[in-house]
Image 1 (cartoon, rainbow, N blue to C red):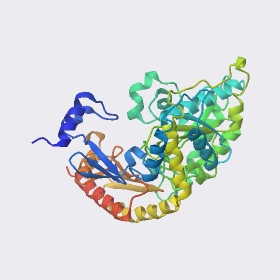
Image 2: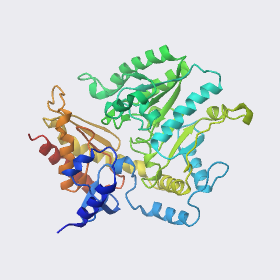
Image 3: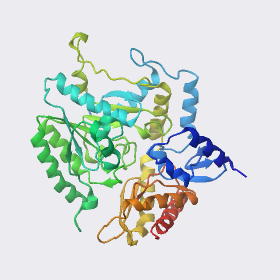
Image 4: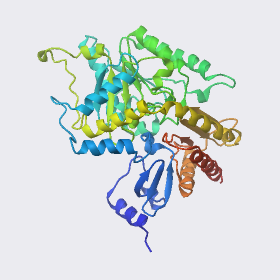
Amino acid sequence: MITANQRFEKRDLLVLWHPCTQMKDHETSAIIPIKKAHGVWLEDMDGNHYLDAISSWWVNLFGHANPHINAALKDQIDTLEHVIFAGFTHEPAIQLAEKLVELSPEGLVRCFYADNGSAAVEVALKMSFHYWRNKGYTQKTKFITLENSYHGETLGALAVGNVPLYKETYAPLLMDVITVPGPDCYYRETGESWFDYSVRRFSLMEETLQRYADSACAVIIEPLIQCAGQMRMYDPIYLTLLRAACDKYQVHLIADEIAVGFGRTGTLFACEQADISPDFMCLSKGLTGGYLPLSAVLTTDAIYQAFYDDYQKLTAFLHSHSYTGNALACRAGVATLDIFQQQPILENNKRLAAIMSRLVVRFNEHLHIAEVRQTGMVVAIELVKNKYTKEPYPWQERRGQKVYQYALSKGVLLRPLGNVIYFMPPYVITEEQLIMLVEVAFDAINQAIKD
C-alpha cells in the first residue's frame, strides 16, 4: 500500500526541481514531504518526526510555528500584505529599520531592503562601487574576498565567493575579483592559537590592500565563520585588523552577516566581538525568524549622502525588487527582534552553547575526526580519513551524505557540508534534545566510516 509520503513524493518528482540537489539521487533517496512543524520538530505526511538541527538552512531562530511571530503575521495580513516601496512606505518597514539601526553596530543608520541574502550582497557591492563613482574615484572597480568564502549564488555574489563547487561552472560569467588566502584556523600549526594564526594570516590581507588600494572598492567578509565553506572559523582579531586597514587604505568593509547574524555566534552580530562597525552589513536568514524572505543592507550616513543630490545629477541608487520592503516580511522581522528585546535570548544561548560544548567533547577522541570547533551556537565536526594527517575522505565517497541518511532514519535532520557535520539548531532547543542530536550524530558518523 502506498503511503502519504510516497504519494507526495511522486507528485513532487513530476514537477519540481530542488536546490543544491542532484535530482537523480532521489531515485534511491526519498524526498521528505513535511506536513507541519512546531518548535524544533518537523512532521512528515506519515507522522514521522525530525529534529531540525540546522534551523532549516540556518533561518529559523525561535522554532517553527512560533506563537509571537504567528500572531504578528495574522494581524498584519488583515491590514496590509504589500505595497510598492518606491514613493510609498508603511509602519512595519519603518519600525523594522528603526530597530535594526538601534541594535546594529554604531554608525549604521540607513537601511535598504531586498528579498534574500544574495540580493543583499548584490546591493552592497553595487552601492560600494557607485559610492566611489559618485565621489569621482572611477578607477575603483575591484572587490577583495577571502579564499573559501561564500556570499550567495546570483552572479555578483557568486563572483565574490570562492567555494569551487558553486563557482567553477559559472566562472566565464563572473567578474574578476582579488582573492586573499584566509584566516581559516583549521590550518594553524600545532600549538598555535586561533588568535596568533589569525594575526599571522592577516599580513596577506594587508599586503593586498596596500597593493590594490587605488582600484579596490571594498573587502567582503563573513565575520568569524565561513559557513558554506565547511563552517571554518577564525578569531575576531582578524576583523579588528581588517577594519583598521580598510580605513588606512580607503577601502570599504562589507560584513556579510547573513548566516552569522542574530545571535548565532554568541553576540547579536558577529562584528560586535571585534568591536567594529563595517561600512555595509548584509542581513537575511534569521531576520524574519525563518518565516519569510527578506534581507537588509545597513550602511552609514556618509555613504547615503554620496547619493543624495538633485535628480539631474544622476547619482541616485537605482536598484529595486518588486517585493522590496514587503509588509508581511517586515512585520515578521519586527516580531523576531521583539523576542530578542523582550527575552534573555543571548544569555540563554550561552547556556545552550556550553551544553553543546560539553556534549561534543567525546568527538575529539574519534579516530576519524580531525577537529571539533565551535563559535557560539554553531558546532562543526570535521570528518577525515586520517586524524593525524587530516587527509580527507575522497569527496566521491560522500561520507557526509551517509551521515545525513542515517540521521534521518533516526529522526534528526543534519545536512553536512561535504564531510563536515555541523549543528546550528533553533534557540528553543532543550538540553534533552541536544543530547539526542549528539547521540544520533555520533552513531551516524560511525555508520558513515564503515566501508
